[in-house]
Length: 234
Image (cartoon, rainbow, N blue to C red; front, side, top):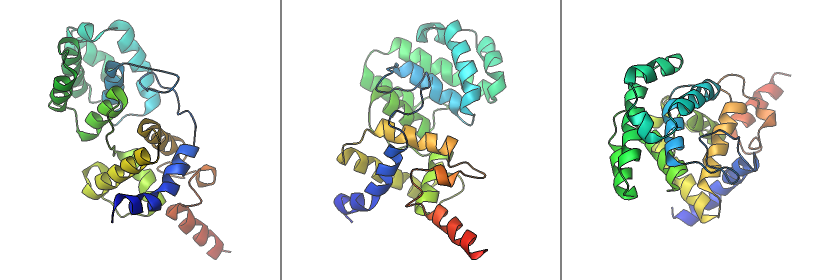
């Protein structure tokens, strides 16, 4: 199936995701129309967010940036001090090493293309984190797939993906199709993925999703199946 036919099928979902919110939630690591941040701020946010609730990250993010306001300062900081700061988030040792190495690269490497290639090789930077840094930090269109995005898309389209969505090739391929169709139809991929994440965090919850409040419930297979079960019980 060519991209035009694929997009015709996907555009209702893309539109309802954009309709969720014109301006995504403001977090200090997000690049928005009304808020511009550096690749370093994006990188810190994405690394800290790995397997952690957003609200817990906010406190540590501000504390980290107030203590080490530049990449060079963080790159030369004491690993023990950073690890102690990150302890409430868990995985503090791994995240500390990743933060220091990413900060060192951002401090020393001035060639953007070389920098992006080096970031890909940093231990602790997985495919989704790397793609998120490139998409949100360098404005380079990249597909994303994590537990939140995967949950929302799986419910809307009724897919039978693996439990760990980021390990499923079909999930990644589908996210890439959505990305291409978003761009083809004039939608900003950053806003698209920010809205997907916000839907997953606020509406399409792991337990007890708030389906009636969702901008995509008219086309969501999960919601329709719930409605049928509800009607059948009367």
